[in-house]
Structure formats: structure tokens, C-alpha cells
Image (cartoon, rainbow, N blue to C red; front, side, top):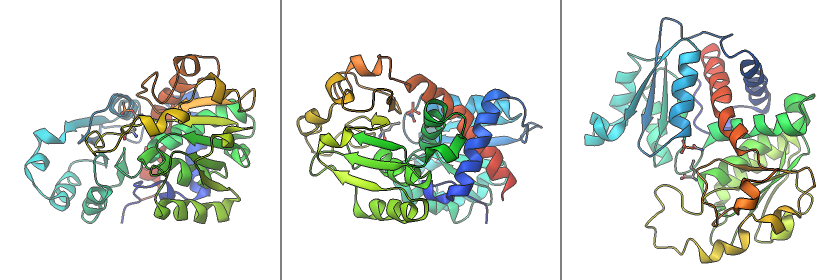
Length: 312
Ligand code: CP
Ligand code: NVA
């Protein structure tokens, strides 16, 4: 069975720290690891739109010596109903890894039934674990560069907005794995499902991290990291819910950001919608680290791919 990365808790706290250390090393020396020399190939599949994921995987795979086969699945037989199990078995004959951005999380676990190479979740409706690795790398660079991943313990992150989406779930599980206290703050009806809170708390019990879910924006007081994401995730555009009015009190603007620590940083996985989930004064202001965060997608994913190839 290959070691997949479908969810943030597919890496133990120790394994996550190893990947983050390697990400820092690869940022310093981008061509120092060449496990895909040949070039060997990696399938990078998209059921949904992407800018960062597409470019960071394609460029990162090239830096590892390999070749990315980037495919919009609508143009493949997957789009015509070939099963994910058959696709996983076939792709495993050609490539070293499969990276897939999809809708239902069960699509990934279906493919994992037959794939004999590692599968990386590059976003599902439930989780976006690659983004979390990049975010943790960015937090380390800003808040504990000397200590590395160990310095994340006890740091406090607050995510505001849609608490019932892939980013909120991954922040809970991935940040708790890193030992960070994580709070999800959103309106009633848009808070995380219990399943994901439970998984995050299991990790928190191991690492000492706390996981808080609330509708009270006072939670931002004293935060080290303030985060938001779009109010309308891909696939939620026509779900019949009002995705603006309930969220307005949760917009990260200067006033809300002012409640966090003076040296707090602001993160957003992007794409951002200024005037909705974040005010321009914050995302374009001095505490924003969103473009470092985007760059770190490539370094963190390269580290993940190297680590997975070494731990099959
Ligand atoms: N953050 C992120 O995954 O961006 P893309 O949708 O552009 O890949
Ligand atoms: N929650 C967003 C993240 C985009 C990178 C979405 O799923 O659309």
C-alpha cells in the first residue's frame, strides 16, 4: 500500500515536521533533490479550476527532475464515466504519483482502492491539506524561524468566515497536528461538521493543541495568525444558501485585524475576493503574507512528494 496524502491526518505530527523541515531545505536549495530524474512522470488531475495548484505542482515536479502530465479530467475518459478504480490502476502503470483536485472526497478514496502509487489530495470538498503545509511553512518563517516546526506549539491561529468548508476542516486538523491552537469563527449554520472537529481534537490530544469553534469574533483577541477564505467555495455556487449577509460581521478588515497581536500575520489561500471575506487594507497591508504563502505551495509540495517517494 503506498503512503497517500488525502487528509491532513495522513501525516503524524513527527512526519509533518519532517516534511516542513524538508520544505525549508528545498526553498534554500531548489534543485538539491531529484527523485524524478529520468524524467519520471506525475499525473496532475483537475476536476475544478486552479491557478496556484496547477503552476506549483507543474513547476515543482520539473525542479525534482520529473515531468507533470497535467489533465483537465473533463477531457479524459474520467469525464465520460470511467471508474476511479480503473483510472487509478491504469495511471499507476505510467506515473510515480497521482495529484488530484476533485469534488467528493470519496472520489479520492475510490481511486486509492486500486492505485499502487501515492495519491495526493490537491483539494476536495472536504479538505485542502497541501495548502496547510504551505501555510505552516509561512507561519514558521514569520513567527519561529529559528526553532522550525517545534516552534509552532502554542501559537494561536484564528480562521474567520465559512467554517464549513475544506479550508476550515484542514486548518483544524493540520494546525492541531502541528501543535497550534486553532479557532474556527463563523456564523451559525456555517460551522464545521462534528466529524472534522473530532479528528482535530484527536490530534490536539496528542500535541497539546486546542480546537475552538465559535461564532464570537472576540476570539481574534491576541491571535498570532488571522486567516480567512472565500465565502463561496467551488461547487457551492448554487447551494441555495445566502453566502453574503450572514458572513458580513466576519469580514477581516482593519478593525478586526487590530484585535490580533501587533505582529500577527494575515493568511489567505487565494483566490481572494476583496470587499467580501477580506478588506483590501488587510490583504494588501503590511501584515499580509499571502504571496509568500502562495510561493510556499511549491516548496511544501516538493517536500511532500520527496517524502512520499521515500516512505512507500
Ligand atoms: N489556493 C489554491 O489552491 O489556489 P488555486 O485554486 O489557484 O489552485
Ligand atoms: N475553499 C476554496 C479554496 C480554494 C483554493 C474552494 O474550495 O473553492
